[in-house]
Length: 399
Image 1 (spheres, rainbow, N blue to C red):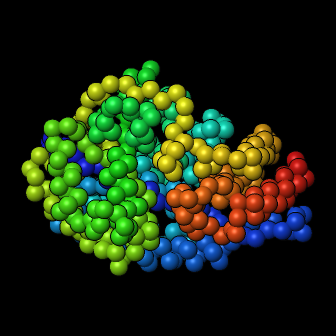
Image 2: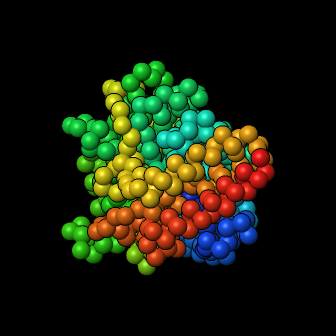
């Protein structure tokens, strides 16, 4: 474990949903195939080529180059791992090579990248256990850190996670919960004795994830030495700096032509020039640092959009109707106890399906259009409900 005074904690989210095919009213009762396997294969192959394979190769080189002084963490959804196995086994192999270095932490989340923490405690815990088993099976790693889908968090989620034995949990360093405090310290949830909370430094994270290639940004271009200077300026006023972002930042959101890979290639060199600074994984941070105080989060927060709340998934009546229609089937799905039907019901829980129903504009609109196969939120809702109608009919028939 690093003994540096201030540590950089890199966490990358890797997720791909099982995308739904165009499913019309006339398909109901006639076709139980809901997935767009062509889109799944094309997108996995594209993102693997542009992001996962070159980025994993770069991280492996950095770990070897700095002899273990450089470390990162990943949360890879179960739906992403399933598709790597089917469409890009070389991508899964490249993550296994990173796992073998001992410098990469694998974080537990919900298997289906779902919002089950909001709608069903039973389902939430089952998906956590499924994902934990998958991470052990694929990477030989037993996770002790948890991150909920889209960093969704509140005091109740923290209590559940501590009860499951986890030591560390990640969430958004939202101003509305921090107030005057800084995200660059370790906290603990109220009424939790052992669980540590790591909060995303959203400004520095978003400088890389969202502003890196924005030539109208007053700090453009962002270079590794400039970013390291900003980080070093926090010395004396930080325990750790949590840089949390989608892994697709590298090569997909920020294209290679922007210089994003070269930025990452040079960043450890400039960070480590300052002897008080190092890199750390979330579990190491939770073990090394004591909590400076409790952080009370009575309502749900997330890392989505400027509001840092649930409106990306629960912001309109379309989304609410779709959610409640889906989770209303839980008792029937459990009574049937059919593996294939349960897997389909869980696949339909993936947060992306509801994200596509979001009605937002301006700056957030471009985020919601990423890999969105629908012309508008209403089309996404109708398509989902057509599928759910067929699934419900099939479920009732089997019961």
